[in-house]
Length: 155
Image 1: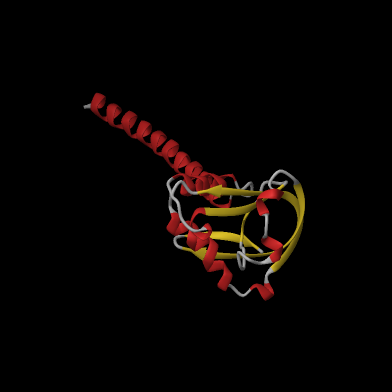
Image 2 (image 1 turned 90 degrees about the vertical axis):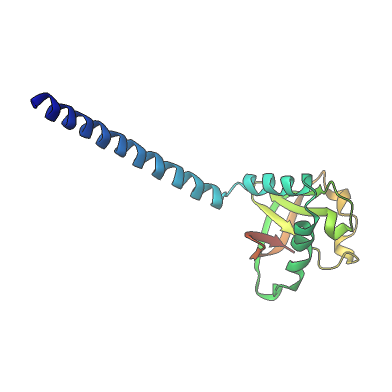
């Protein structure tokens, strides 16, 4: 009987130790995912947008291009920073709103989806020519939910 009691105590002690390790791992993973959702570098958003384009998800690309045009931009935060203009092309053909997504990446890595109010607007013509250069941006920034995600848009 003493051996049985000793066995139970030993097992309980090991289970308690394993429980502590499991609790630690759960906390670590939860904090890792939470930190990833904030993602100050913008890397997660960039990878996500790249996957959207490579999967040919033109519906989401169109939503990201068109829905922010209806936002109230008058009270948007104004930011000035240096960065680069980039774009992603969908693998699926479609209108520019369905197949091309421009974004701004600041030198500290933050990513903002560029909202083009009107494809014929003079300030947004020949954007492809600006891709290679580091630029000074003076933009309005808003965050909103599109579909299931929150995005920061720049205009």
